[in-house]
Length: 366
Ligand code: SF4
Ligand code: SF4
Image 1 (cartoon, helix red, strand yellow):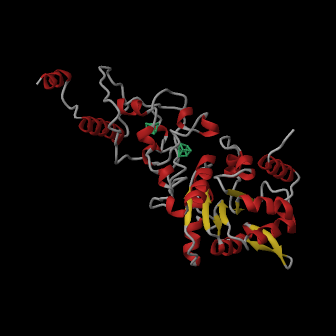
Image 2 (cartoon, protein in one colour):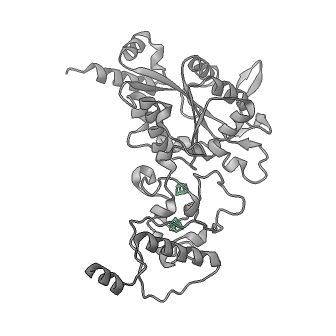
């Protein structure tokens, strides 16, 4: 059976990965790959993390993570995951040497988890002269050398759960840490608890294909391609919100705003891109959005407290909701009702449908 060069290289890479061998250590294979594609090492550094974002990434199905690592993310580019503390086969000095070798090349740094600054002993990676090396030392050094830095997950982006409450670990996001240390490398923030695997893969692919200028970010350093739309404006339960039908307890039908849904203040493409390969997402399961893509997450007051709504902007494509149903509402808190009315008013104004049906019909005739 004839086997193409491309299939042979793919098979070789897969075998090497299964054995925990770095394929680029083999001069012949390294040469074969180098002639065909550009290799970009990725150092994935985990600090104050639960590894949830890594687990999410491993669940990527289209493309699968093994395709990302063994094939070409974009034509002509191969990602070499040189260091990942959770999934790499190597350990101890072998693992640390993989990081030190990778950082001598032009690499991309990915940070998962918060930067722990109050007591850096809470995060030590590797040893030097018999002492643990603080995570902050690695992140500052790698941050200065990296061609690009991607902060994966809410904790790496903004501090997240470890920075909640009294924050005993002095946790903060990578960008804030870089600012304190004078590290100039820009940080692309991909908040989420955990991230959608496609958020990482699409950002990485865009970066490799078209460079950093192709990734337009918002004021929080998040790619606009992912984090521009308000969940509230794209929510399948929005009709219930506008009609004032709210769930009072978990399991009730209706909009889950009163159960603390942060959809009205959260920007992410979760409604269009459900998790587990499109299977479901938080609100799809009748659970409030916890706002994990926002800098305020996990929120000082309560994750389950309704958010005061200042901006209700139903998309102009939504039809207005006419109903004769007597609305049996709990009008507490008052701003919920006001927001609902405001939403309706905005929508009707946007659609030019403030008149009743007969007037509108008359308009048509004229
Ligand atoms: S409050 Fe939450 S559940 Fe209700 S419409 Fe908005 S995003 Fe959807
Ligand atoms: S729906 Fe909200 S809590 Fe759920 S993943 Fe999206 S941003 Fe995070």
